Length: 230
Image (cartoon, rainbow, N blue to C red; front, side, top):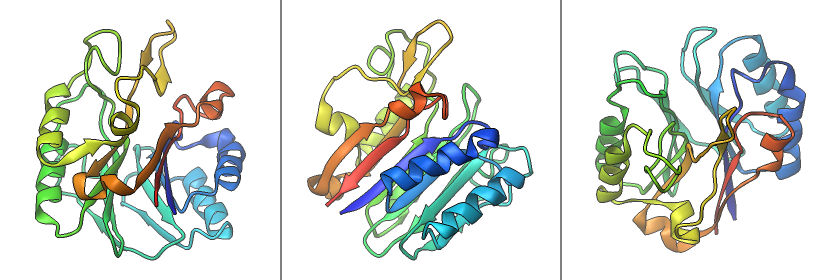
């Protein structure tokens, strides 16, 4: 079985770093994707602690110290790619790990900002010979489905992603179940975090769920998302 956990660790982790590492130790995913990773002291310390846990293969982009970016850390070897031209304003928000059987794109998509990253992701999926997985904080969802209201941007782009052959693994397993990965101060729930899997991989998707206890205990404001293939 291959276990992939994607998690928005909130502004690089900071003082919550030990609790973040404790989650990784407890859940022991094969591959970890962190959004809102930052290339600062906390980021360096996180990577060092992950290395000690056996995550010998790591990829980050060259984002500035306080810019939110993405980290992929894996127990399996991969070929890494960064895409500084994916969007002129957000050059560090998509990275890729190419494994033997699939390509994994880790994302942190901007919240209610105009960007071209969905178009880039669709082009990338079409261009690669291997089936794709796209995980991370999309900062959007489907209106009236992944939230009660209609404030999401980019719902149409999620539909376009599905037309390009990518399937929402959570919906594939759980149908229209109401579940949220982030809550506002007013208590409104939003499913911002997603795992999209290209259709040839769907038969081996065994688990796609959220680990809410880590959000509820304040380790981050997002629930980690777990995707198991096997």
